[in-house]
Image 1 (cartoon, rainbow, N blue to C red):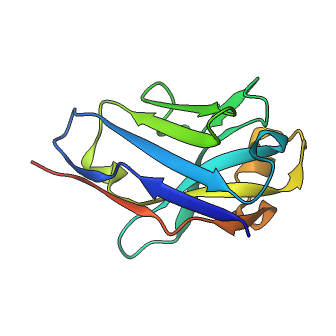
Image 2 (cartoon, rainbow, N blue to C red):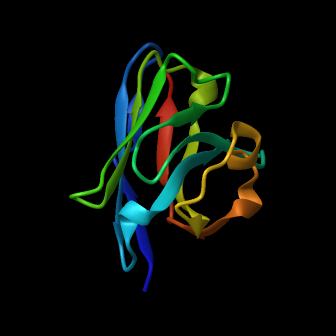
Length: 130
């Protein structure tokens, strides 16, 4: 069965860095685009970043562009999110998610539609505070 397991969350100071990982299993990881999304306390879940199945292109929400970097290692079935220059507003639970279509090429607005994902991890907490 499809499993997505996030790790790497924790407490960081403003301006600090964290690296999230998502271990995927139960499907052909290299055939699916993947995304990270987050949910701040008391708010709805929002898309953060996406990467094509082959890693050839990446997409970011405007608020994280230039600070976050999404990447993947298809040989290890892992997805990553490198987060730098963290801000308190980056606090939330971070989820990885699988595109519901395999080898599907989307534009940014399509990646941002959370209905386009069929499997989600359980999430990892990121807290940015001094």
